[in-house]
Image 1 (cartoon, rainbow, N blue to C red):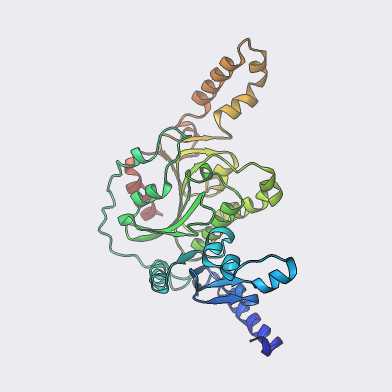
Image 2 (image 1 turned 30 degrees about the vertical axis):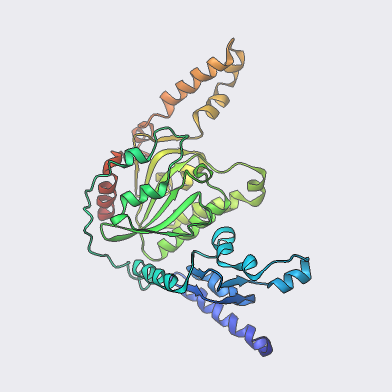
Length: 366
């Protein structure tokens, strides 16, 4: 309480220190069922997962009254730090629900996917979904044309047991998906680009979201499966000035540092630094697979041809025809599906319909 003065502050300091000591040792979950203001908000921020309930829970460091006094901005408690704000804009909240019953049911579901501590693995469950179930529908779900979007969540649902997926930070940094699911009864962490949002590029928020998720999975012995369809990092002044290099490095560090089994699968395109950062073989992925539609390259064929064949295109009588020819040449020589496999940078080019079976067998081996 405010009237307890410095003693109240010292009490919170003690809680924060304990949160930090327990971090990565035991899973920590914060369930916000009311307001959480001031320094107290740092305790949930230190935990692995934050649940909030719409309209009844808020989190902020300085409340609307202080904001009004200092900046002159008028805003409600929910507008400043409600569940939707933290689930969509700030990324403080991992899960937001309409009522307490649903919220607590989801907390119980999450607990079933986590181990008791970092010395254990999550408990496996009996699985009735056949490990060798073929996913013919995947061929229709993912268009071969790399410029056409699709919903990566549907791909994940097709691969995992009974289509059950728990998305973490579902509404924040939507261009990347972080999810917990089961494969043949074993818990796995899935990181995947989402072509439906910003074409699946990596940006500052996506890098932070995925880095934290990878570190959590690594701490609690949850194997990682990475699904790639990434055109690169998001270009722009805001991203560069906001520190995309610094934030992108967090994701790179998290993957390089992870010691759990790691499997990566390239569905369509994987360009530039984003390909390396998304758990490529060169940074320590145990097994790397690709679909026959994969394109692994430094950049897209159009951009690459413009750089490499700039002089030939400029000197040509018909620059557009020359550009089209060079793009085609670049694609056939350097971007065909087996280019990376021939160099040992992809372990196998697999049948998309057999993906579930390949992933299950790979996890069993690792």
